[in-house]
Length: 320
Image (cartoon, rainbow, N blue to C red; front, top):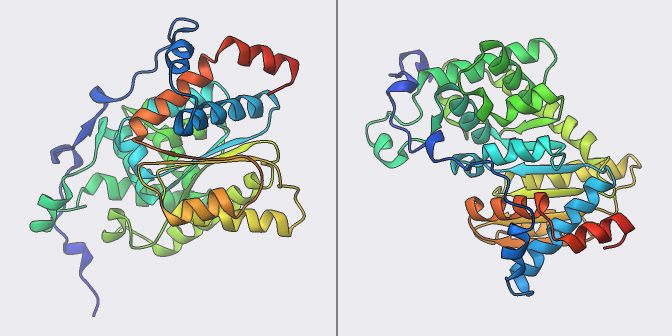
């Protein structure tokens, strides 16, 4: 039986109520010198607070050493309004590569299109309208097809399409910013897991080819992580699995990748991030931080842009 997908009832993205919009997104502000360091310095020097400080120092050391810092994000990180902070970290040299999953690409595109994203799944599922935003599917699936024809991976294809279309809110797109800066912005897709796969415009061959190209580009990045860091934020399955396989390729081909920092930031403890990101690589310091993304990531960013004075002095001396 062949499903008549061309008969799906779709709607314009602008007609869909979205749960989050740019008006509530994080603001990229720079505090007065020393203000944030004093605030965070008041926290106890134990457990999560200590780990947050140590992670920040490790990332500062990596940037000083000009070693790569790669960030893997689940889609929820974009849904809670953190794309402005991620872009700011790119601009400050704290993120040299960004990886996400298929859902992350969807939210990224919708934010670039209308400055809002995320539908009410439970209510939309009842009448079959869930995931039927026509603009999202046509833009993303079309971008990937065109990108594959030109030899691009998934992330670069989407970033290029956003750029060419001059989408009105493209400043909110992390994939667009990666494309503009020439940074690896990779998308790792599970076929059948994303709303755009439900539409007739989805082409499995193109999606697969684009995602595989991005996996290989990500593996090239992982092969250069010596002295750097990989931070997994909010991906419980896909990115930890992708990271482990990329690391295996790098080491199998003789790359020296045995000393770098790993971290996992999420609301809950999950098996794959703990094993594949923190434990199995056995590469150096690892940090496991529990909490809401919309709280943890701003705190980490503040520590990076306004570190305590003694950190700066220690870094200048080459000590930790």
